[in-house]
Length: 192
Picture 1 (cartoon, rainbow, N blue to C red):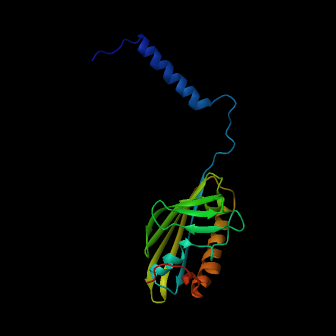
Picture 2 (cartoon, rainbow, N blue to C red):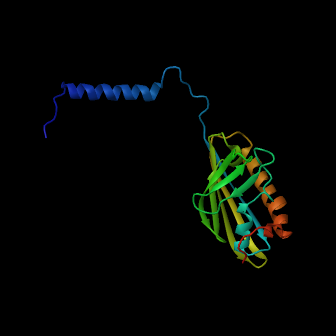
Picture 3 (cartoon, one colour):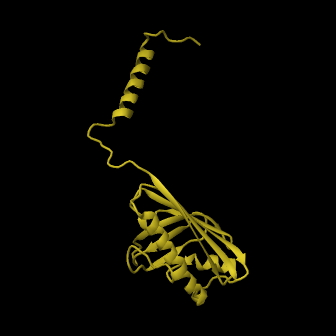
């Protein structure tokens, strides 16, 4: 294969294209400016024991979660649920017309073993995402539920503590008493 001489039109065109690309990458478009450029992340974990089987614990944390999940955009959602299947959504439906929010997407669901969903949850509208993994392990007193959150993106100071407190609230102040009182058994789910 023959090479183009150093002064050929192809060589000059390639040199100009490389120069323009370098200039664009280093200077950016006219009038554009970076407002904030930082990324951060955090990880957190919580563990609790629920007095039910792993399958029942999984069921209590999926499907209709309005009995224990009390944070929403609308204040009084018509529906709040997690579809426990790959590709399923974590939805808040505001009203009869179907307006609402997708808080996260389910990426892994194995009833009684593992649930994972990814999304901004209550921090929608920010360049921020969380991967939430919940595992269910048999325990002498029922099921050991382990929740881990890994996050990254542009975040404000204090979000790590706030997210940790919110998960503590959901798990220990809402979910645990909800399950212990047997309120999770009110639906038409398959029981173990």
